[in-house]
Picture 1 (tube, rainbow, N blue to C red):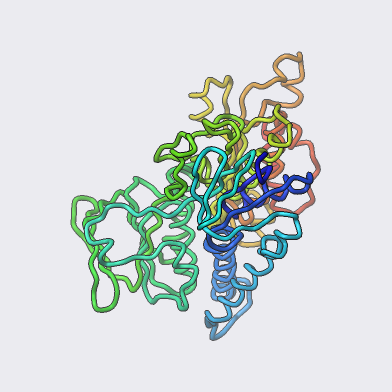
Picture 2 (tube, helix red, strand yellow):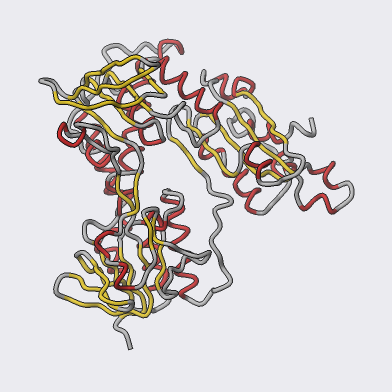
Length: 467
């Protein structure tokens, strides 16, 4: 008989979800956390960065309000107040993840670093805990490329950047993915002269190319110097900060900045677990799991970033919930990443789900089509003066092909979408729901939307086949 029904390793969103739901069923649960409950999202990721983004949005709006007839003079930044706003957001969002809240869920919180002794035992300091089931939810860590001089010169990642006590006068960001792009725009709006360097041919390489073009154009117009297709040669310290040497279009260039932010990806965090002692298969990409998130030891699950899939908090929560359900005996459930919303919180936001047109064709879908409405055709965007962007939906034949006449009446199945607009992440949700249920385009198109709203743009683009 083991001491705990479930032992969860890692107190971020995924681990907390699995622990809370299992304890709710009356099971004895231990949660092992080596730092602070809440994980990267609460302390160094989603919550602090989006709080900074909102402050930067207000700053940018105040500085550019004259076009609406609102003249704001002597707009200035009080970064100490911004930091208080960030801390307040963390305190409010983290209330349900505090040690007191965890105890209230009936979960035993164990502080320390876990290491597997065997497949049913972990050591935490001098103690040993045994369990029937385990959930590994240790997240991921920023990774830096092998650039000559980088380690010696020193650099920041998002972990350090959210704790900056002042806005640097100048900033160089290496990495044009979501984290790098968000920080580049945010810090530039807060007053840092910002340069963004990326080795790829364009920023946001995993997103729709047209979306990347919009964000590139907006950032450039706001004053961010963006260089793509570069080769970083070296990094060195200077009297005032860092100097980055790089090659661009066959010529060597350099940029000086007070601070250097590296945002070139993350890797699963499991080195200290000694997974070999538990017989758990793993690779550099993460812990190997099946469609039920079970590892090579079927009583041990891996969820969230450590499992090597999408590195999103909402994925971590969904996987933690799935693991808890399977442990509870709901064994028919399986993980699928077919419908995972992805949002980059730039201005405008980039929100995507599912497949792009070329991906749908490659996947063998039939009658693939892309439907698009420019944001400049959405009346609410016009009234807001925010017309950079678009609404794009990809469709293909679905189940409705089996019912004569229904395809013409209701349209094809939505298999993907990309929205570039203010609050695009919120606007994406009707499409996410339709895709999850394999519903045709008409289900979204025939819903009445209030006028004038940005959500009317979703109705406009899904209504194209019928209008």
